[in-house]
Image 1 (cartoon, rainbow, N blue to C red):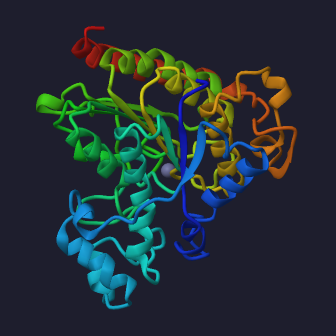
Image 2 (image 1 turned 90 degrees about the horizontal axis):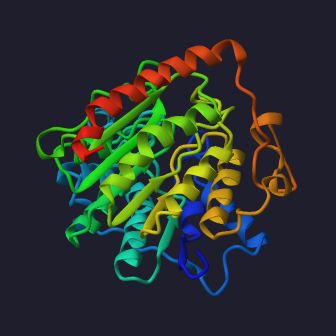
Length: 380
Ligand SMILES: [Zn+2]
């Protein structure tokens, strides 16, 4: 992709404001990713640029969220919300804490995804990346799972307003319940999520029989995965159940949520991936040559998130097609340390032999169900 224009959407305020220090959601990951990429000379060039995002206005937030919830976000940031009021809107919990000027912060973090969508629509960029985005759990009237304003929904609406058909692919370890609910009866946004099964992980949804309704039937796709899912099994689910659907749908634009909490060693989840999977999926999506908005998301081992996002940006920049061995880093998920030597990629992790057969057969069932229920809708 030598001439595709790439925009890294970020402002320093996204690093310094934000979630309290004791919250597992680390706001500094995006800025650290930017620093890593600058140190590798992967930001400034003829076809790469950094773009400052716009904060969302109240009216633009209300494209998806209810006015009383937006009131609550604004009053929470001013310290005016009572504990009872806060809980009604999902605020003041360990994962959706109240902090000073929170509306301004979350409206900027979500605004960066909408800015990215506009860059694509205006032809100013072919690929935009907002590592401070990916708030896929936020609902119209409440916060959930570290998510306050649903930037994915707002960015997708920006695209559909312009008449575009949108593919949303979510590889965060958690199911994208807020986005799925928003577009469940629509066929102009296809939502595909690979995630740890709701049987073992928040938010407890995203089973393969959730496939959309009405006109949207067959345009929601869920790939729930068992504990311990490893690279080869995940890639097989992607190539057999997901990629054919994306190609058949043939969207005008795409959104990719790259939460890194599916990587081995994440403190909040139980999959066993390395960042090579994220690199491969990012490459497969980039190879479709559609305008692409990529976002961050979860990732509660901050070092692994910074490495993973830096790797994905380098893939989007066309810098990762060389011999993998030369680019393989030490450290990361395998050694559980943060010394990066030699590159951004994790070393290959072997699957736990005892669990491998059970994982494979569970994933086979999921693939079979998607192929029988969803593929026919798309002529496959
Ligand atoms: Zn997540």
